[in-house]
Image (cartoon, rainbow, N blue to C red; front, side, top):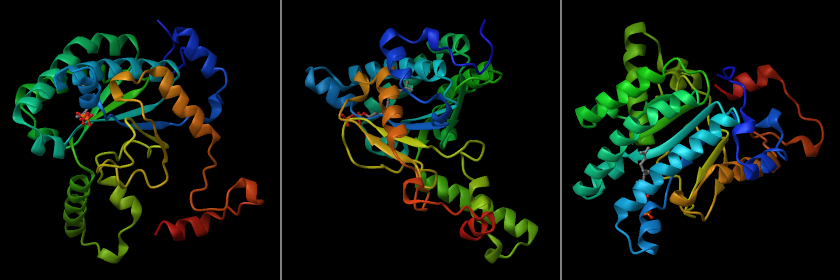
Length: 277
Ligand code: FPP
């Protein structure tokens, strides 16, 4: 057994190790979020049914998660099934995705244990079929004590409905505690999001070339670096995660400031507090 939370670089493929050697381990992103897109196109280009694209996409989920855990990435969040997917896709495809999720959890929990991966979810998961919810609970409980990468699947998720749920929760709390609306802070909203327990994503990856956010983590990606690749999700592997991280490390993150290359950066904590409300 390896020590918890230690990167397991020796388990990377040779190609991944070569690329990892060029990264700065001290400035890895803490949280990477991915919009997994292109399963249908992957299948279409091979004259296969869309279902096979999703099946191959599930394989990518497993492999990318394993690379993430080997490099010691703390948080990986994947957009696996949106509220819009649930409402707008043919029932047969939605049912297939639910069966695929169930069988993915059944057959991957042991690998998650081997890789010290903790499984979590965000979204209106209570609206999913009960047998899927049961399997989700089982996977979450089985992996709960793992201390490596937290893999969060966004399921029946939409960022606007997350904000609606957060505002409902906040309004209820304010009424109970008799707090006036002008005292609301960003921190209060953050506490009521599904993601209250995790840091905001530093890096958002989208596969298959579309330049859209598609209602994913709208609040949380305020300062995320965005990396879009033409590669379709079923072709995306750990090495491509490392390529995205390499691109991330070449960016200059400013958080609304002027950046280090422009001279001295003022970091007055009192002024930062005022800006955050
Ligand atoms: C987009 O492909 C992808 C999805 C609908 C969600 C992602 C689903 C998976 C990766 C498979 C299952 C996941 C797990 C965790 C078991 P698309 O169908 O929109 O592709 P297209 O835009 O090319 O049609």
